[in-house]
Image (cartoon, rainbow, N blue to C red; front, side, top):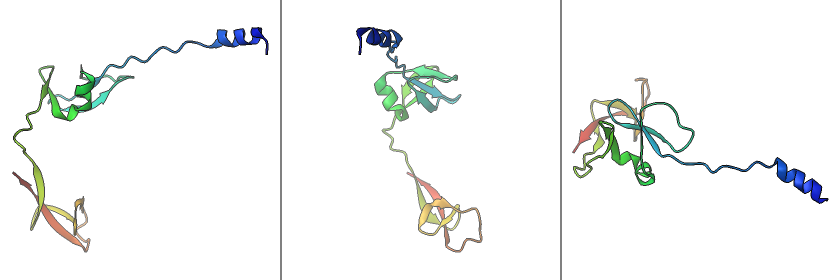
Length: 114
C-alpha cells in the first residue's frame, strides 16, 4: 500500500481524549447514600469524594453537605428469629416472605436486635 493511503487513514483518525473520573456519591434528603457514579453523571444531590471514600460508600452518610463516617463501633445488628408472629415465610427459608396464607409449608419469623 502506498504512503498516500496511510496518510489518508491517519488523517481520519481522531485522537481519543482520556476520560476524567469524578467520584460522586448521590444522597437523599436524610443524607443516606443512594448511588454513585464516576462518569456520565446524573442530576441530583451529590458530593464529590475520593476514590477511597467512593469504594467504601457504605461507611458514610452526608450531613449538612459534608461526608461523615458512620460510627460502626456500636455493632448494632438486626436478626430474624423464629416466632409465632411477624413475617410469614417459607419453612426453613427466612428470606422468602409469603403473601399467600394458604401456602402449606410456612412459619413465622420476627426481628431481634442486639
